[in-house]
Image (cartoon, rainbow, N blue to C red; front, side, top):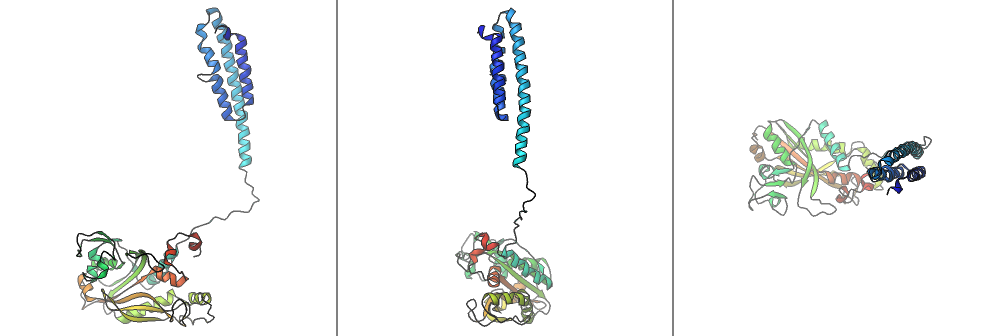
Length: 370
């Protein structure tokens, strides 16, 4: 061991270290050289740890030479590290160089979903008519979703087959049963219980029913419902409101596009949109009606979409006196009307979408069209 600690051995370590430092082609390789020679278990460190084994007359000389070797290796490592750092920086700058002569890349921005666009369009129309937007919980009590809306206890909608119940203690309906609302009508009850007439609101939002998904049905869908309660409101006010709404929603520009898409040459006259009311039944309105709009695809001529020139778009009617009494209104003093429409159905008619499931498939080829 003592022979191995001669000046010649230390000189060999120095020469080998210098050669290894020069051959290092990256900072990572250089660090491995540093560890090999100067690390805790490195070749030179091991020599310094054995100095105590040497005779006193040799210990001082070997120690001095070993320290000189360490200092020279450290200086060489720092110098090589600086060279490699500059070289790597230069390579990185070359690799990251931006060619300012290349054409720019246009960023792709998202847009509102078609359903959100239609909801906003409907909302804007009714805000222009003086209505306010009201919202309510999607997880609702049976009382607001059914009972307060004059829905009989034996109505099919209150069965487990038609409604998503979260909490239901028995087969018989109870006010505190918890469910996913089947329409946005509970919002109307909550608003009427919180304020006195006049009331002019619309309630857009999601609703849920136990429907098997198919081209025209979905267990989750969107509605926009409206309510007007004031003194002297008549069925004529309801009809006039819906006529104005359909004229604005299915305006001439949109009718022209639909006619062209379906292959019709005729163009509709300015604001010549009509509606048709057919008698119907809803538990919370009396009298009630289903509202049809003249087909915007064919202008009422008859096509593959409408069949006979008319398309059903919503249900409406005069608020049942029982509903007014339930919320504390006097049906002898005030009256009102209500209406509701499925947003998906409106969007399908406006844009010719053949399958309601396309709205939730998340296919960018479909979504990016609108």
